[in-house]
Length: 302
Image 1 (cartoon, rainbow, N blue to C red):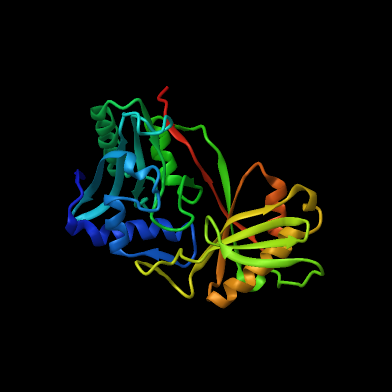
Image 2: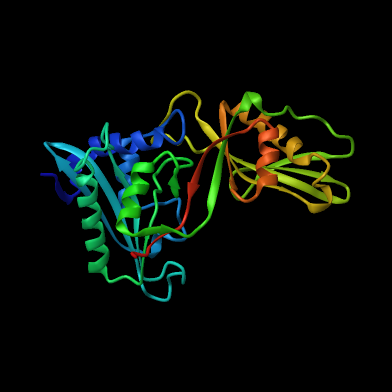
């Protein structure tokens, strides 16, 4: 019978293999190291606002015949006033992973269901106000519940979790397929430090036209990305008065030139699924839809 137990340090290699199997189904050519996985079990420094609000973390695994077949990481947010209202007294399955069987015969999902039962028992013991779930792994563009994980979605839904949040489209482009920068009379493009990476701002004497930000730090040393590694578009904004002048494409051209100099061979972008206009502009600029991910899962058993 499968055994559900707390994570042990000697599980680290098998857990990393399980994480990377799920990452690879979402983003091509990306994997994470053992050190990245272990660090993420202890804290998430990228989440500098919400991570200090976490009061307890638990990682559970399911082992069968010496093989780690499923794993989950849970967090409990504190209930005090320092915690933001949306997170206050919330219990969350941060991610839930399992190896789907080659064929779904009766009983083959039992290891995943046993682990989910243990997760729900932990949430019940914490007596939290709300129970939530996600699939946020320590890898670029792996968050929410990605569509390439139907086996994880099935476990969530059997357990009573329901999707009530947004759906986002994750897009990917080769930097070689993006536009080249073109000079525009009367317009200068400044390169500065931005909120989400390096910012390129188009300006005229009258003021700012718009800006784009690129993050080239996704492939940090503790993460292993085959090839030159990906970057992403952190922010892309054009002032309303200039939105019909093609400035999104021009700004992407300046960002792409910089990314090619950085050696980044791919770039990611993210848009809400209902923003079809923004998605269409990115597709026209050389992006392709990589996948969709559903954010906001809450335990609402019928």
